Each structure stands twice: as structure tokens, then as C-alpha cells.
Amino acid sequence: MGSIEELPDGTMKNILEQETLKWVFVGGKGGVGKTTCSSILAILLARVRSSVLVISTDPAHNLSDAFQQKFTKTPTLVNGFSNLYAMEVDPNVENEDPLGSDDMDGFFSDLANAIPGIDEAMSFAEMLKLVQTMDYSVILFDTAPTGHTLRLLQFPATLEKGLAKIMSLKSKFGGMLNQMTRLFGVSDEFAEDAILGRLEGMKDVIEQVNKQFKDPDLTTFICVCIPEFLSLYETERLVQELTKFEIDTHNIIINQVIFDEEAVESKLLKARMRMQQKYLDQFYMLYDDFHITKLPLLPQEVCGVQALQEFSRHFISPYRSSLDRGSVEEVELRVSILKERLKDAEAELEKARKGKQKI
Ligand SMILES: Nc1ncnc2c1ncn2[C@@H]1O[C@H](COP(=O)(O)OP(=O)(O)OP(=O)(O)O)[C@@H](O)[C@H]1O
Ligand SMILES: [Mg+2]
Image (cartoon, rainbow, N blue to C red; front, side, top):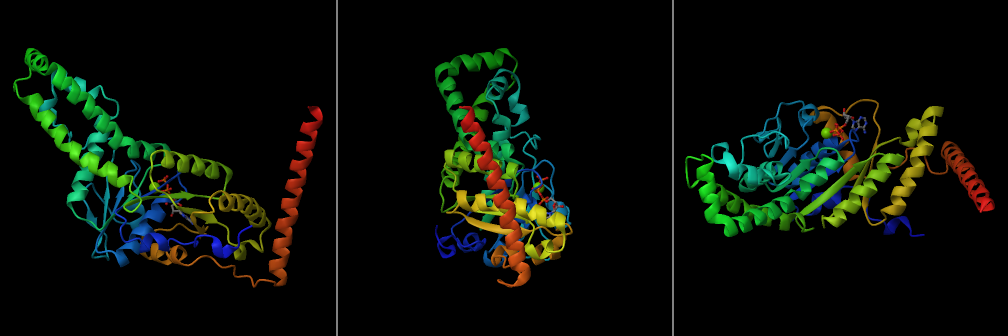
């Protein structure tokens, strides 16, 4: 077994120090602490970068809750900062119709709309185009729960495919399309050229973004989770999907960990802690090449800049047990955890033996 020294450092310092990073995605299952972590990371990045934008793409926005300040779909300076901006966009709602609804009547709009996800993809691309021109030093995405996030990351590919399809149709049936749009009552005979022009213009942005998202110098994905079975499972799925899309990921935040000073007194917490320890071990085993940052479960919510700032220290220095190593309490706790795990292992062995006998 490798020694602790060989594991990547258990903090988020690597993200703060990677000066080339331009896009940072924060994602994971519902309610695990994505918004809290993005907000804290944004605050920490604002200390070392010239300008930071944090964007929520979750329809149930909660950056506003975390910072206790109302945000809209245009970047707004976060109170108390001079270089930290936040915005909330809804990928499901047609903000302003990115294709231009006037131009989109009739046959051609049906054609464009027949490509699944193109509307959403176009709004996302428009948003990326917008934020790219704004020249932020780093852009953080507080994403919606897992499934949605991955769809978002596929948008550039969706769009590229859709565009290719439209372009090939256009070159094949260009003349006919022109006649048909006129036939179906589009008043401006150049309407579809206008749309095509727009789509083509978008293509550059998309190609660029697609390339950037796949460049580990520019983009990384941070997985947030909690030490429980479902979350471990979901994290593995997420990591696999990201690998498939060639999106870099090497940080995992495990939130809501019960630190041992909380557990010594309470039987319930001790039991929960044992359960968590089992999954923590598995996280460390599965992701030994990741930076794994543990965050404590607090008795209260993490709301407002002050609470976020206070909580941010766990991003920078790894947790050290408050119990002196070798003290009676610490040894007792370790023994009780080990006993419990031995019991589990014995039960598992017994089950395996029984299974074998049947065969
Ligand atoms: N370590 C923690 N201890 C106590 N409360 C926490 C902790 N982390 C997050 N919270 C609180 O839990 C709630 C959910 O956290 P958060 O909004 O960050 O999760 P989320 O993953 O963004 O959720 P959603 O999927 O709904 O967007 C918030 O009220 C937050 O303040
Ligand atoms: Mg959230």
C-alpha cells in the first residue's frame, strides 16, 4: 500500500494554482453541496485571479441563496468584491430566441427544430459567446444535478452535428428550400440565408469552445459528493462519462463528512461515521490519483459571504483530527470502527461461503 505522502494533496490548492484554467465545472448529485462549493471556489479564485465569473445553469438557482444577493442573467458584481461576478441562466427557457424568432417562421424553422436539443444548445452557445467576449480570467459553472450537466457538456457536439446537417441540406437543396420558404409564406426571401449566416457564425464559437473544454490546461470538472453509497456510485458514473467526453477531472470534494471530534459523544454520529468511513476508504481506493478534499458536516447551513469565507479554509488545508493521535479517546474510536468493519467483513465472508456451497 502506498504511503500518504504519495497521494495527491487533499485540498483544492491545485485548482487555485493552475493559472491557465479558464473553465471550471462543479457538478454532482442533487443537494450534495455544488452551489456551496462553487461559491467558495469563486471567492478563493477571486483572491488570485484578476476577474472571476460564477454562473449557475441550474433552473432552481441558488447562488442567490448562497451569497444572499439577487442575481440575474447578466453578470452582477458580488457585494464586497471588486472582481467577482455572478449570473444565473436557465438553459431550459428560451431567453431571447437565439435564432431570432422573426426569421424562424415556416419550413426552415421546422428543419432547425428537428435537430434534437438544438434550441438549448444554441442558448448555451450564445451564453458562452457572450461570456467569452467579456474576458473573465476564469469562469465557474455551478451546474444542475448530474444528468443535466452532461447534456450541457454535449451541447457543442450536438450543435456541430446539427450545423453540419443543415449545411449539407442547404448545399443539396438550396434552391428548392428557397422556393419552399417562399411558398410557405416567409416574406423575406433571404430569411434562411440570414439564419444560415447566424448558424455559421456560431460554428466558430462552438468549435473553439469544444476544443477548449477538451483541453486540460483550460478546463476541469470538479465532482462534489457525500460519503454514501449512491453518491459514490454516481460519482463513478460521472467520472466515466467525463472521460468519454475527454473532459479533464482530478478533484473530488467529499462534503458533509462527520469529523471525529463531533462523533465521540454521540452513538448515532459514531455509527454514521463508521458508515462514512467505509465509503471514504472506497473513494480513496478508487481515486488515488485525484485530489480528494473532505468538508465537514456543519450543524447549520452555509449561507452568506461570511459563512462561505469561514468554510473556505477546508479547501486550503486538509482536515486534521482534533483528537491527539494515540490518546485514549482516539484509540477507542479507532478500535470501535475497526471492530465494526471486521463484523461487516465477516458477514460478507459468511455470505460468500454460503453462495459457494450452493454452487
Ligand atoms: N458541509 C455542510 N454542512 C452543513 N450544511 C451544508 C454543508 N454543505 C452544504 N450545506 C447546506 O446544504 C444545502 C444544500 O447545499 P447546496 O445548495 O450547496 O447543494 P447543491 O448540490 O447545490 O444542491 P442542488 O442540487 O439543489 O443545487 C444548503 O442549504 C447549504 O447551505
Ligand atoms: Mg445548487
